[in-house]
Image (cartoon, rainbow, N blue to C red; front, side, top):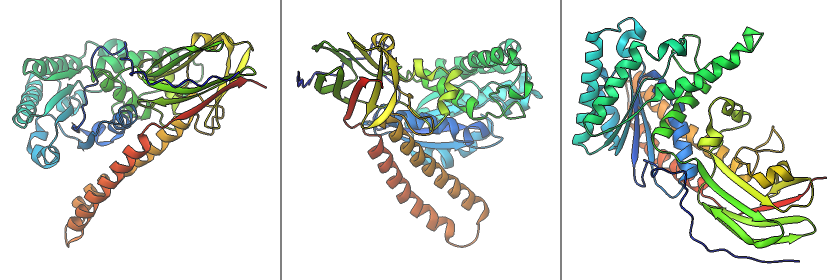
Length: 410
């Protein structure tokens, strides 16, 4: 028997959202910080998340990280590196260099840090830019000891100052430390020390990819990033029993133990390439930022295969589907993207990488090619190219209808 059901219901407000996501349509965001910011990794993750989850919001991202910089030192370059972009949001992350990697952890350098924070905020407020002051990223030190260390206490004062001045603050350190505790607990169970996981490069200060993801996660949580992407709840015996949030479904077909429907989402899950989801073992992205769920009751067979737009997403038991499965990063082949949303996300990531590779090339040209017209010529061409890349990002990130097929597994 075939039923065709077209639902034009309003999108349900996601109950997990305590507040609306802080980055609004039309915002221009600048990440301001030291070498951890200049690596561009956590900034690109936040950019990709925003593109995929809020494809109708036109938000631009720029990076103003500079290796070795401090809160006080960056004030001199605010016009050149930050305000030139006319930001509406500035996300600030300093601290480690301000105390000389711990060698200058004293009241004198704390005062310089706090004075620098105050000046950054005041200059942003003059230009009506909203400020999110982040505590510094954690170091590789024992998390049980770093919770009461000078760096955390200094950053606590900085965050309190930001709030006092009417701006926002994000405690990156404490959120990252929670992730670090998981990593250390995992490492304690390993017999082979060479297999231990870390959030840091060998210097214990700069972040590796896992550490950058942890920092991006902390900032996204501080920006009130919602956990729910969208959800669909169906009954295999009754096509009229449908509950959706964050999406619309249509053209439901049930026959011979097979269920089909078309799903059009409001936004897409965050995915970042093959095997990247292994990082989610420590950083709770799937549960707290990336819930893209399918729930089906009253199924008759024990195991089902899910195929979406002819891409195999995975095989699930009847019990799993009745409880609900998060298919955001699910894949039937670890060497290939999972659902079509995963493939779209990987293309968006490539375009974002291209944007930032272009920006790095400009920085290098300005630094090392002093003579001749090349830097200016490159800058003018790069502006047009960047606009084109942003247009491509937004095009690829747009949700489109996906055809879901749930069939008994062979």
